[in-house]
Length: 216
Length: 216
DNA sequence: TCTTGTGAACAAATTCACAGCG
DNA sequence: CGCTGTGAATTTGTTCACAAGA
Image (cartoon, rainbow over all chains, first blue to last red; front, side, top):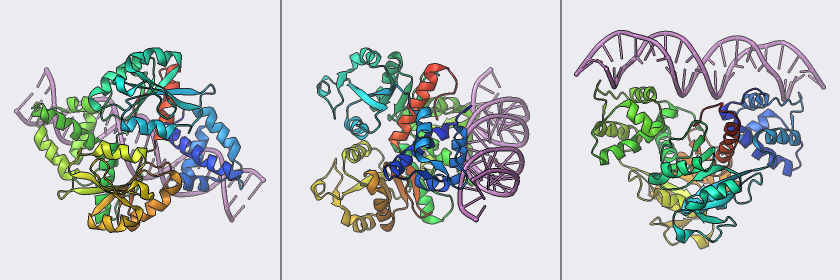
C-alpha cells in the first residue's frame, strides 16, 4: 500500500457503505462487478482500488465482505476515533449535525460553534454548542482535527483561520468561498451552487442530444 | 467552443461568482492570476478554461469583467431560465431551499415535494410544497428539468425514477445511494459522508507528514 | 515588463485486453 | 468457464515553457 490515489479514498468510502449493507443482509462475499454496480463504479475500478490497498480476493469467489470491510476501516479510520467540530449553527449547520448524528461512530461531530450567543448553550440533536470564543479550548480538549464550515461566505476565511489556529488540519467547507490555508491543512469543498449549476448545464445538454455520459 | 470539459464547467461557475463580486466592487478588468487566486485555481487553468469557451482577453489588461460574465452566462444559463424541484422536505431539504432562495434568478427551486402529507401545503421560504403524487403534473406545468434529491437512501432510487418519469434530465443527489438512471439523465452526487471521511483521512495524513497537497 | 494564448510535456485516472487461477 | 490481477494503451486534466502583443 504505497500511495492511495485521491479518488480511490472517496470510492473506498462508498464501497464500505455498500459492504455494510451486504453484511447486514448476511452476504459473505461479493465480486467486483456487483460492488461496482452498487456504488456506480466499474468492475475494473473496484479491482484497481482494492489493489491500491493491497487487498486480494479469490478468483471465482470474489471478495470476503467482512475481511474487506476491515481492510477499508484500517485505512480510513483512526482506531482511537476522530472527532469533528461544526461552525455555523444555521439551517444548514443544523441539518448537517442531524445528518451525521449517530451515523459513523468512529467519526462524530462532538461540538458546534456559532458567533451568535443566542444560538449556543443548548444541544442540537445531542451535540453541545459553544460560542466561537471557546473554539480553541474545546477543540484541544476534545482532540478535534476536522472542522466543518457552514458559515456565510463572508465569514468563511476568518473562521477557517480560527480552525487552523485551533489545530484542525482537515476542513469540510460548505461555504461558497475559496479558503486560503497553510498547505498542511486539507480542504474538501462542497459547493452546492456549483453542483446545481453543473446539474442544470448537463441537463440542458442532455435534453438536446445524447452526447456526454452521466455521473462525475 | 467545440467541447467544454466537465471540470471546466464547475470552475466557470466559480469564476462567475468571483466576477460578480468584482463587478459589485466596480472592478472592470481582471487578470488570470487574480481570478485564479479568488477561486482556488491556477492562472493557467483559468486561461485554459476561458480558451475552452473561446473567450479572449487582452495582453497586459486581462479580461473585461462584464463581458466575461456575459460569456459565461451564455454557456451556463438557459436564457429563458431553468427551474428545479426538490424532493424531501426534511432538515436537509429545508436547508437547501433556504440556501438557494433568491440566490440565482436564472435557476430557482420552484417547487418542493414530500411523501408525508403533514409536510406539504404551506410554503417553505417562499417555495410551494406538494405531495409526491403531484410531481408529474407540477413538473410538467412548471417546465422543471432539474431535480434535487434530499430523501433517505432507501427512497432515493424510487424517487429518482419518478423524477425521470416526470421528464427531469438532471439530478442533484444528496442521498447516500448510487442512482441508476437512463443514460440521457445526468446525476451529480453530493455525498456528505464521503466528503467528511475524505477530509478526516487527509487530515490524519497531514497531521503526520506534509505529503500530498490540499484541495481536490 | 507584464500580460495572454498555446504547443508540448507531464501526471492522473480510466479502460482495454489478457494471463492465470480454481 | 467466471473470476481476479495487472501491464499497456488511452483518455482526461494539469503544468511547463515560451512566443507574441501592448
